[in-house]
Length: 26
Image (cartoon, rainbow, N blue to C red):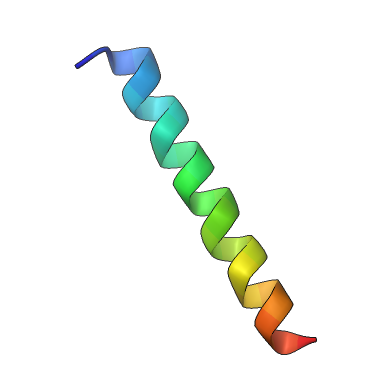
């Protein structure tokens, strides 16, 4: 797997995770 793609997916996963937590706290 491409390293750049792997980093991008990891970053996207973190953003979605944080977004989900923020939505729950509303």
